[in-house]
Image (tube, rainbow, N blue to C red; front, side, top):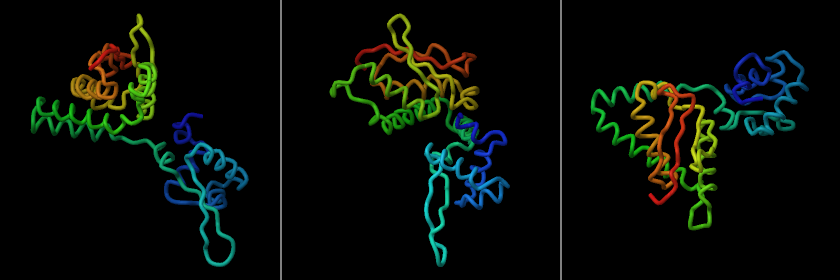
Amino acid sequence: MAAADLILGDTTKGRILEELITGPRTARDLASVLKIRESAVRTHLERMVERGIVQPSFHREGVGRPRKRFSLTPEGFELFPRRYEMLLDTLVEVLLEREGEGYVSTLFMSAARRFAEKLASEIPRMEEGASERKRLEAVVRILNKLGQRAHLESSGGTPRIVRRNCVFRVAAMKHAYLLCDVFDQHFLESLLGQAGVGLTESVPRGGHTCTHLIHLGPA
């Protein structure tokens, strides 16, 4: 089951997660609220613990054995829908109105490089014997951690990174140049250490994917 399926719709797992977002609960508490058997709740909780989205802990409350409560992990909280892109869209509009496109472009370029620096430790270094393919695969893994739904392809011997989900969709639809040509471009170049990163298709400009050709060589 996909992560979103745990939240969307009236699934038992989704209902359990909705309860846990308000605070730790015992299996008995959850069974009482959801009006299902405690054994069924425990089965769902065990599966979610295995997935790393729920964690158990023990709390002593007065005399007797500690009670086992379940709470969301950081990964569990990440399952819930967020609308950060609307905030980004608003911030971009305010910055453009106050400072102009030149200033905002420079700002996005610097932000892209700073963001890449924070993630660069996950990419194997060439001097450590890593092949270009390994480095590209590491970049794809980073993009997928960011929700990009990315994969690696090859076109005429030239590798390309293809992404099916634009995490900046709302803002990028209005500000494709800033998000696609400035931020995205410099972010990938900084991650790869490559000068040749070319955008050939983008979702905000009507494409089905965001695709970058990677021209290997020294930056």
